[in-house]
Amino acid sequence: MTEPMTDQMPDPMTASGSDLSALTAAELLAGYRAGAFTPLDATRSVLDTIDERDPAVNAFVRVDPDGALAQATASTERWRAGHPLGSADGVPTSVKDILWTAGLPTIRGTWLIDEPGPWPEDAPAVARLREAGAVIIGKTTTPEFAWKGVTDSLRHGSTGNPWDPGLTSGGSSGGAAAAVGLGMGPWALGTDGGGSVRIPASFTGTVTIKPTYGLIPLYPASPFGTLSHAGPMTRTVTDAAALLDVIAGFDSRDWSAMPTPGASFLAGLDDGVEGLRIGFSPTLGYVENDPEVERLVREAVAVLESEGAQVEEVDPGFTDPVEAFEVLWFCGASKVLDAYPPGAIDKIDPLLREGIETKGRGSAADYLDATAVRMDLGRLMGRFHETYDLLVTPTMPITAFERGLQAPMGWPSQWWPSWTPYTYPFNMTQQPAASVPCGTTGAGLPVGLQIVGARHDDARVLRAARAYERASGELFVRPVDNSRGAR
Image (tube, rainbow, N blue to C red; front, side, top):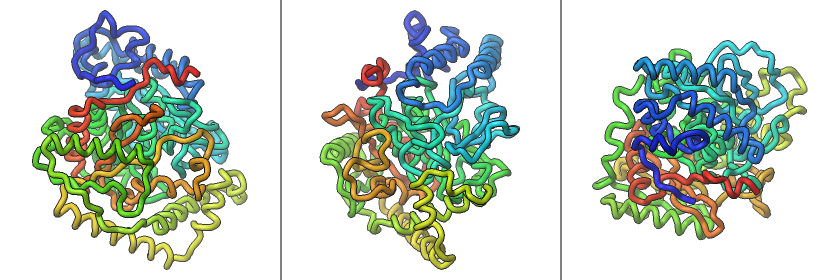
């Protein structure tokens, strides 16, 4: 079920109709450039694919066919005139229903928000996509306020996995990952406050990067504060780098926004890993992995070593910061409710309510203590990267589990951080962290390899992810025929 990817122009005799939904953004743009097909062709194909496949997985809360076709028509005219707006012109794109989209409701998976709006403004990343000509096809599912590592909500139900719709897609960007994995748009915008693009990427065999905090500006500000990042979700590393080029850049509405990058993330993407110093931590010193996950991750690290990386098995030296993370996380969740009338807590996800009541109402001293843990962790990882260019770990210690559950059957805790130990530490440190698929288990379920870099070293993280992707043949996992999803 793993197919090689090429960025060469697809054969116009075969890449037509519904086949267009299987193409990457790079392949679509090559086809537009050559006149093999148009953005309108591609958008119609994606909309047809959504009609066919979304009922099995519930990836979208809203599809906007009229708006998408109008945008695609305008893009087609620009390409025919030889004046595309930018490197996303005509690419069908979905947006997680956490980020504002002008003209479309942003419901955030909750009954506390009414649809009528008005909805006059785009989030910064959405605005950049529009400026580059992307076709916004709709909004993807999220748990309520993007608070957990699976995608279900009282308002919109649960989201399934492209490999088996009876399994979870992960979360909180599970709708974005399922859409990308099933050809319902070649790329998507997600968000990540503790693993929310990397968890579903690992579970669905897709590609993502949580970039350095501030590289993709956010507005309005997240109640989860500086834990929250936005990120691209794609089928290939090349597409992830290209989408990051579009959505990264300064925006005055975000007080912590970084300057617009001076170089493309595609530059040097294929330079490989020869000579890079990689610290490989199979457990971070405290995690127990599914044996098949650990085997596949070790095989992936061996591929990087065969490509010339200098690999040393080493733990970075911190203990599990989950208690500090949960204080920071649920204090943020508690602040979410301040915007709503009294009694709002009685209308939300019961497990979110429990987290707020038990972990989110501590003292200022508790919050400052958690912040101190975070600062120490950032200092430790800063020192780690004086010796190692990259840290490599599993993205997840497990594969996807049953849809609708909050944790794997029989797991000792229902809290999502208990089964996502590799992701949230690097939200606390604000480092770039990518997930790239590194094979499938005997049961046919994807596994992800996490590549973590020093702050502001996003390009090197992408370069290593691309080196693995190219060398391994695991270029992306794409269940195009949806034989599992059709069950």
